[in-house]
Length: 321
Ligand SMILES: Cc1cc2nc3c(=O)[nH]c(=O)nc-3n(C[C@H](O)[C@H](O)[C@H](O)COP(=O)(O)O)c2cc1C
Image (cartoon, rainbow, N blue to C red; front, side, top):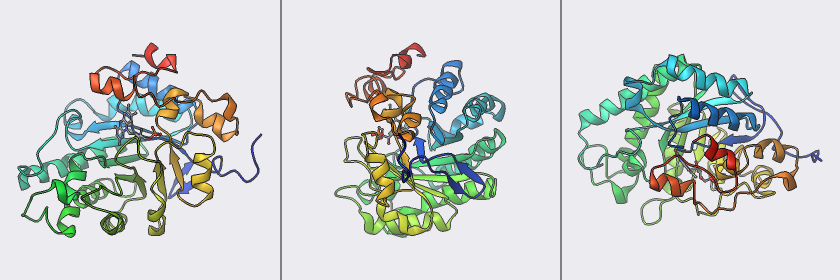
């Protein structure tokens, strides 16, 4: 039975986009090509399970200058929309699985990456996507530019907070300039990195991101073992915030909303373990959910082994691999 006061089932309007409820499927690298038949089947199944939005996994912006055309993306977007969910995609500054050294990237290369984000966003808009999300979290390139412990630069992209914010802000401004108001712009940021930065720097950064055109802040702790949602302090910035991290446990997601810590909740491994997690949580039918055991064997484990992710409790995950 659905409690009358439940917030999970309530819709949310973000500019012209309607979220049918408060559940988001966060970006998760599958090591299936998202535009392949397997990839499309994966995302269709997860959209059918009831979340308001599915964010497609971290996808390197260089790919949009190669094979990721609007035509290639359209069937994937149609599969997600056909199941009633909004479609977003996380944009990654380099091909996923490769990396660049913060200290040696030239200013020209930084400008090149910023331009590639703009190209990618334009193609996503053309493909009918609802949102793009630069991956600024988890110790990857954009996050390392922000992090003083990881950024040795002295050229306007390092040292002061204003300079460490620059790369991320340039990405956001370039996307906004490329697509106008036609896409929602999410930004994923890790709020605290021990020994490097804290909320005293993350909050001013988030404020600048919003001023530069970010519509939704996706606040993700740096470790999947971190104790859940850390989005609450960002709610004062005037845009919806997404909380993520172990919110699949009964009551946790609803509590994050009812206690005012988030506007949207992202459930990752919980929705891999039970693709119908959202529908069941929304009707308050927790006993029907096949719970994620947090074994991390075939999701994170397969990522480490570089084979398509699967799940020890959802057999459907490997059937599509
Ligand atoms: C297999 C796997 C792949 C992931 N890939 C990404 C990714 O592409 N981008 C990202 O920002 N986070 C990624 N994450 C992190 C999730 O989006 C999420 O933040 C994390 O799993 C914590 O949420 P959970 O406790 O609900 O699983 C990944 C997680 C898993 C399990």
